[in-house]
Amino acid sequence: MTEINKMEKHNKNKRNTNYIKNIKSIIIILAASIMLIGCGKKDPEIDGVVDIFDYVTVEFDGTNGQGKANVVIDYDNLELEMVGGRDKLEALDSVEDLGTLNKYINVCASLSFSSDQYTDLSNGDVVTVSVVYDKTAADEAGVVFGSESSHQYKVSGLK
Figure 1 (cartoon, one colour):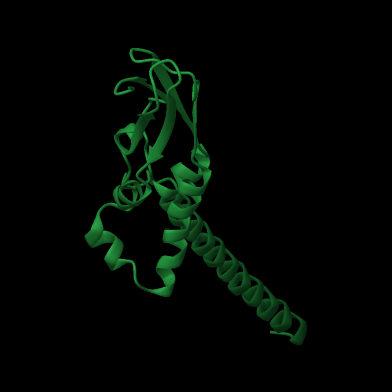
Figure 2 (cartoon, one colour):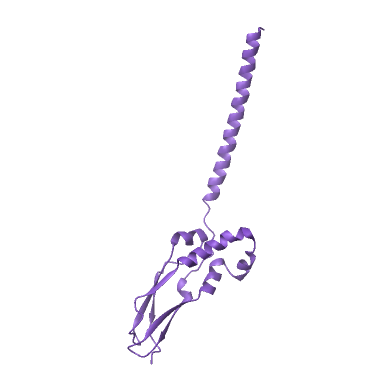
């Protein structure tokens, strides 16, 4: 075998070895990508509230015909329910859990309640309280508030 033939055979073997290494690398990258994509498609764990209006009350004060409505939100219990209960909240105690807690904080910060009437109320009137929130933040936290975006309260207790 001549020197040129030996060099050609060596180069051919080297190319085959590199080709096999490249194929192995591509297979590993594809397998890792498929696993990561599959993990990203997982449905979020639902920790959330079925009915957000379980945590909303409307207090009426004043005299009949001149009553006032005050919308009160029980944020403490709402947040506790969003997290999944006191045990789960107490388990979130490490630095890594700050990201999880921050997701719940973002949901609470996005909540906005409004009423169609606040003043000049009479017994028997109906006040509608509406809520809006950042649905993306709720989805990221795995919180489901249900489909009700408004709730009606009957005015009572005015003097």
